[in-house]
Length: 551
Image 1: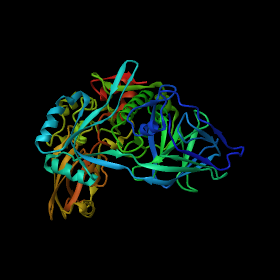
Image 2: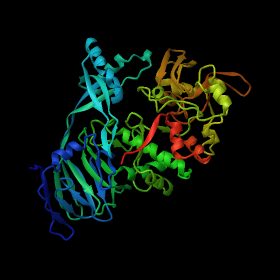
Image 3: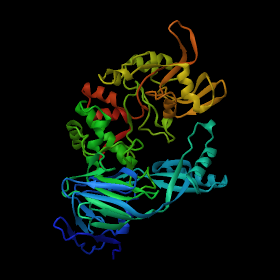
Image 4: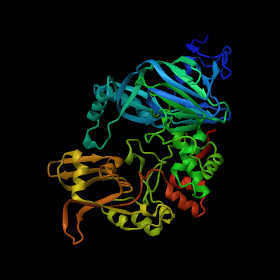
């Protein structure tokens, strides 16, 4: 029998309001508790057309959330199949009271995909022998469609639990010393979910609806829209699908959009590639974005009541209004298509704007196991390019590479021409400002200790008048120098127009735009312009993979 707390008060006799009494839930139907647990689950739900529903956070840390629609939305205090309230066009949701979540934190010792997990028992035993407190933590998701199993799970070996994220971070740093070039990582899990009493108020009638932990809102029609307004008088953003309001781990409101994957992709893909690109490039981008989206499920926001966020951390998303005809058509034409490994499992189909003529290995950019589908190599090129640079970049070849304009697919594209090669001058004063947080004084030298296959700088030693620091990580290094387009660069002492040395200044010569892992979006456009199909584009950028229909 279903147990829940729903309180409805106010002028429900007014013509605008209809209260629909819930039918008794048949066996197998989700209880309210099941539905709340599902908010934290890494399993998929599907809509009536068989498309996965993605829960994406659109706002959090709120005291008040205003849900609007041109046609009065359905308020579902108990989720679908529960009581339904149809009121006015606006509902304001706030917290009556809330209890914070209880978390536990682990320093990550290592990770393995399911297909690479045979050595986990040995790793676990080794951790115990070192006096650690190992625990296996499963992330990712697995689902089956039409006889195919899509398994994107991985196992993390964590040390803990630790009472705070800071304590776990300190432990992780101790276990991954800076000299190793590894990155210290932490994973957090819920020990106890947060709890709250929510109240939704119709400002026109004064009607109030209270419920424990979550309130669901649905548009009046299946293809309708809902809007969210974060503050009175502020702008609103429209979204497809349902919206639910619940409490986050810090006892504040979070608003989540539960949207079919392809509706979401139609709004995402135009921001990832020129909508005017050839259809084959748009189709390749739609498939890559779909795979990247599905592969993230269950690997992020493990302590949050949603699967991904709509910010830079996961995927920037602004709801209805960013769709373009060409990209929407590409999403529809490739419905359900994803890249998989030949042994099964989704490929995390990463991509970047411009590889600079050479792609990068995934494990050079992020702390992860090498992925055969994400290997750096020349982006095409002629026989001369292959002979000179086909084995990757070294300190001996990177200068020649950056002075060279390869015959790569991205170079042949008419897009992003200024990103193939670029040059910046950083004055001594600017360099000192940028490096001030490191506390090394004026810069004396920048020495590359490690490069990826493409020549991207992965580990850098900076020598200053007051000390020396090592900086690791492709993105960290780019940001350190004021936001370089990529870390594929060489740095020389800066000279003025007369050739005089400017101590502490830098001339930076580089190539590419982004991390360079996976598909080069500019190169995909170049391939499409040359008549290549989306299948050929994907095989070029994601070797040893195959296309399958996930839904």
